[in-house]
Amino acid sequence: MKVTYSGKTNEFTPQLEKKVEAKLAKLGKMIEHKGEKIAHVWHRQEKRLHKVDIKTEFYDHALIGYGSDPDLVTAVTQAIEKLDKQIVKLRNRWRDTQRDPKSARAQKENGTEQAQAPAPGKAAKAVSPKVAQPRIFRVSFDESLKPMTAEEAMLVMDGKMPYFVYRDQDRSCLSVLFRRKDGHFDLIEP
Image (tube, rainbow, N blue to C red; front, side):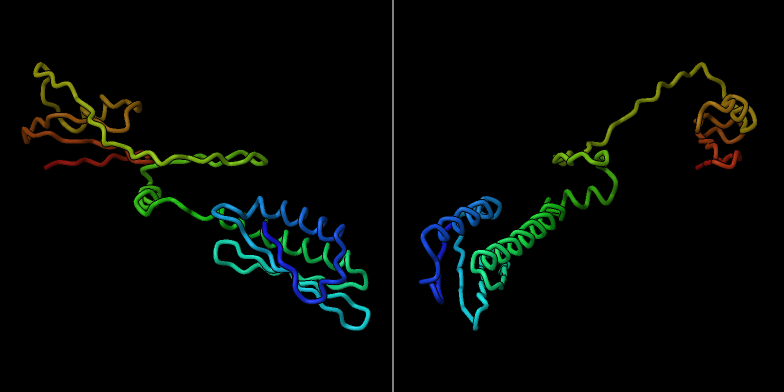
């Protein structure tokens, strides 16, 4: 990270500049993704109070750390800590937002992709969006089965199956019998 100083720069000793640049280099690792970032350090003194502002940019957001103290080193440290908190907060917000294409988000909303939530205390892994292809379930048709009534179909279901497809004896067509959650049945006929 490039550091530029302005204001009362004669107060910054070479040792202090090395400390500031080392601390800003650590912060720079969190925000430098494309190109090198620039940090501006402004120093001014009002009576016996040193005021330090540090400004940098992160994804078009201006981040400003401000510190003031009678000791210059403490003021710089306060400014860097405030800048660090802002960077961590912005990175977490950036990481937690949805960054996948609109088509993948639409599929998630429709329920075609089901992601499991991570266990508490464990980091979430990046889940690649998988597009679920429709599957075809083939039903074997046996002509030796005789047509039946709705009552006979209810007896065949016998509490095991959630639905049953049969050929209706009276109408000579396919019918579907569904078991509802309340224990009753729904009959679908064409």
